[in-house]
Image (cartoon, rainbow, N blue to C red; front, side):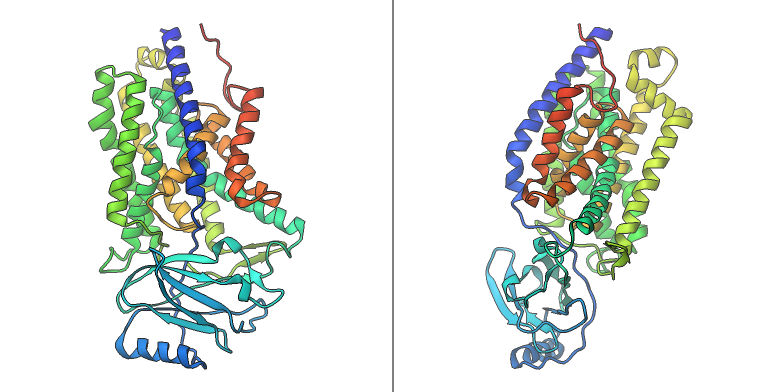
Length: 460
């Protein structure tokens, strides 16, 4: 029995390795997409001095037409004049171009509500001034009927100007933040594998589903429910957990009773992944969108670190949730039962543990945490139908790096992946940060094949 279980784990590990190699080859296709940036909904009342800008604002006020607008100032609140802003449709059709006036204001009307790409030409910025994040020169956003949406392009001291120590502190914080988000999303993936041996490729789409549900709950009336983001996130996590329970009850339990093989079930997870992704795209659309709360905030200056209250909140929530999960696994009867089933399912069942119920609870908890991870990632970046797939490879890397089947391994491995991903940008291009995370994974597995917190097992 033990040998069959070890052979099953070995087969699953080989399948994961093959899938990761395939995903690594496909990753550059998705990494080539422009970075997503949060947009704001602030009102602007300044009078423009150029004819084009003044006419655009007057038209928008007279007939309630849609437009994008904003104000550009440097770190000393001095207006930036002559900066070129371009507005295009999501398909790349040019809508118009406008330059900032003597007060730094700009406004560009659009013909109808919908999704647009608003770009800032960095070559037109004055000497010594640059975007704080050059990757966010293009914003994918949308405008509703009659809305005059204000967009924010944070400018100031760029990464090339800031000292190495300041950049090191900033990227370390970003790595920790990204790592805890990956950890929250990856716990369920690791526990599901530990208890059932199932490699769940649909887990990334469950991350997306949680973020999409929260977006619709947070969107204003007419589009969504208009619930404040904190309440919307709580409801979305509960709904994500319910979805996980329904999937286990309706799909995986019957397949386990029929003794379906792990390879066949792995293929089913890929089909479920494609189904959920297309449903999310059909419901949410192909564009990326921010949440409607906490979009624009003044950063807090903590020594060399500039951080927004939103990012502090994301990190605090993630750490509290991880500590709560670790405490539950270590101190409660349910947590001990989960660890027992993960360690040896047959022995746990012979000891009187209801394995079927434990697996159901793991699915409920795992998908709820996946939904929370998607919401936190959507707050840091934007919500999109492909966001979970982009995290999936890093979740697998964190789970394998920490040790397959253990929640603590998933937490620790995800932190390592997050730190390596962000710190690598200090020396290499941001397009390569995923490559370096996988490179570290390969090096560590060559030295310690069972992962950082995994236990060595004898096969055969």
